[in-house]
Image (cartoon, rainbow, N blue to C red):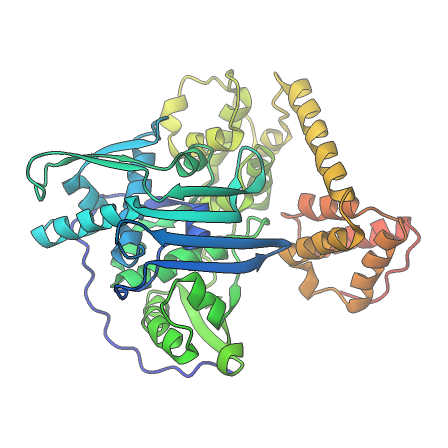
Length: 476
């Protein structure tokens, strides 16, 4: 049933002050999706740790947070501080040692907070909490360079050093060192655009925290397309946002202001709720995007190493195709070694002035899409073939049940599971079970078709099954 809506209340004024002129910003995808900071503005003194376990496809993800030295877990304003630190680190060209050098005044401005003595004190408390809190993450941290989820452990901030005698001096110089895992992830380009102007306009830390996680989940799929809706179990959602309650009514009361404000701001069309008691599910219906990603440009960016969600979000936020075409041409003509291909391409998109000396010949979009990175083509094709063979062997070495689960998960990510008939789904399982086709063939077809229309990918699936002489009945 639809969630009963109460009349929208006037939105309190934001705490943000004079902001930098640019609206765009970024967020590291791991920390945004994992939601490591509680959405609540305040937490009880006893809230010094939490742990949650949930399914993510075929992975079981466990995240444990432990506040050290008598602190409570990160919450509320800490989200704003971390968003500011991530964006300042990127703004300062991602130093290799993971250290951001900034002033307390600049940090407050980047967080959209008033430069008052009150917020000087609050941000110092926030930095102390973030530095003294440890996270253990099992099968939940994506390593872009290795293309896999891994276990990891870190403090949210590795080190914070203040160079001043006055604890509340606006000119205090801070050396803030990010954990190696986070800094490396940012340098490798595993980030997504974040609308900082909208983020700072939101009225409170809980609303901003909900928006941050929802925005990450909306772009979580491997298709590079924004999802129109996201459904979450209410109790799991409350746990993911580290809301200090397991009572459904309390969780909904905490979330209600965020739901109302995000609808007022045009992020959400509506929020619906189904089920009763602890079996409730929330569905977030997003306002359609004004600009869908251009499929040809999206495919070109993904082929060159950008994560689909990152590429899709960039194209949505920057609909002018010409800068993207130029970045693609420069990428293909780039003479240096492309160790982190996705990160290099993202940097070319964000900072084109850094690559003015890369000489390219004028080309149309069609020819740009056909470029094969001519200088290193043999090397990159060999690397790609080796990587695909490695992936094929890894998938086919799994038990049959896990292979079928992998295929089912990829069908979900592609959106085909919603439009396929039970007979079609059964035909795929039967073909794999009887060795008519391999799970790898099906997964590869779905992955390579992420930017194609669903009807086209479904037809390709039918052709694959027909070639294997497996009958796939039913329509789409």
